[in-house]
Length: 315
Image (tube, rainbow, N blue to C red):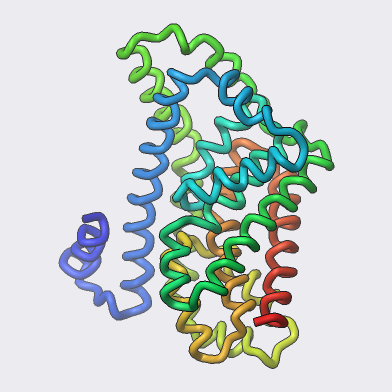
C-alpha cells in the first residue's frame, strides 16, 4: 500500500516516470521515509508496551544469565530470529542499553539482526543454494559476535548518551501500571524518540535516495569486478551509505554476480548495506557519541571486509 501510494505521488501527481533516475529517487525517498517512520513508531510502541509487563531488570536478568562469549552467542541467535532491518533494531538497542545489558552484547544483536533473517535466508537458498545461504548465516553471526566482543573489551559505556540511562531509571516501576498506563507509556515513548530523530531520518533517506537513483549497477561491475584487488573494499564503501533490508538487496546481489562480480564482493556489499546503513547511523547518533559510531563502523566494516575476501577465495 505504501509502495502504491509512493508510485501514485511520483507518476500521477508529479508526472515523473518511475523508469527515470529522478522518479526512482523520489519514489525511494517517499516510500522509505513513510516506511521507516511507521516501522520505527510501531517498534517503539510495541517494545515499550511489552516492557510495561517486563521491567528492564527482568530483561537484563534473562540475558545476563549468559556470561562472556555465551552472552554474545545468545544475542546473535536472538538477532537471527528477529526479522528487523537496521533502523528497526535501534529501538531494541536503546532498550538493551537502558536496561543495563553490556554494550558489546547490544552491538552483537544490532549487527546480527539486520544481516540475517529467515526471509533473506529463504531467498539466498533459492537464488544461490544451501551452501551460500549457510555460509552467509554463519558469517553474519560471527561478524556480530566478533564486533560485540571487541567493543566490549574497549569498555566504551562512557560514549553512550546520558539520557539513555535516565530512561532506565524512569522505567524501573512500570510493572505497577494498569492497561491505560501501559498504552500511555508506549505512546509517550513513540513521541519522545521520534521527536528526537525524525529530522535525521529525513536527511539520511534523502542522501540514500540520491545514491539509490544515481549509482547504477554498472558502477559496481566496473569498479568491483574480479580483477580489482580492492573490489571488496569498494563494495563495502559503496554499500554503507545505502539503505535497504536483506531481502531488498538480494536481486541486486544476484544481478552483480551474474555480471561477473565475485560472490564475496557481492555478499560483502549486501552485508554493508543492511548492517551499516546511513539512516541507522544517523539514528544511533541520538543515543551514542560519534566516536563510538566510528568504532562500530570500523569494527563491523573490517569484519565484513575479511569475510568478503574469504568468500572470494573459497567460493
